[in-house]
Length: 234
Image (cartoon, rainbow, N blue to C red; front, side, top):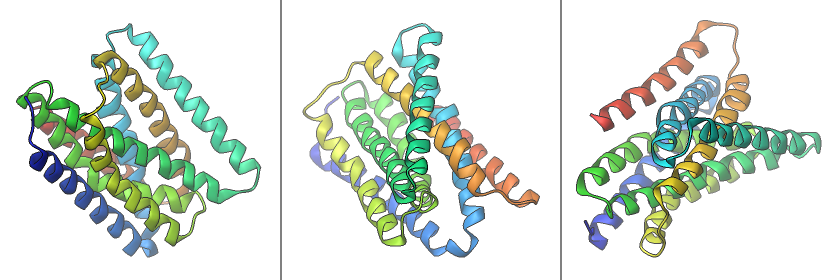
């Protein structure tokens, strides 16, 4: 199935709008940042566990041990880089690292939308619904990861704009490049490791409060992603 430029552009703009809405919400709720961070932590971990990793295992056409090894390697590589930047005392660079990872993921979302139309209408519908459904969380997560890593609000807004534009760039790239299913699966496996590190290693500790509020928010964020993925697959 070949989608028209109008359809692809419309989907890209819809993804950008959802991302901007989520990021704006995160910026306006800065006074209750611990709740937003907790929701983001659950959403990031949920995307890794319920969306990226299952897709990677399905697409890679390789033994699960290889796919999960790539996930683990990406987790440890991101952790090492994050700790190195923290040790150097430049906290803002940590914020840029996390936000750039999420922005690259959004670019891959757009690429996935564009490539899915080359498979079938049904595949395109499932991929598009899944991407649009979690783009709101993507905007929230990009702002929160940026701020939690030490950048200021101006840079958080810049990364939000970059993240919103990324799906459009990915959709445009899909018209010129092709990625095999197995290769895409390995890329998704690596992203799953990075997201697990961001969520469990950075956002959850940043949201830590000695009450049940943040715990429930983490569970809610993770559960919401599980529901979205299940609905997209129904």
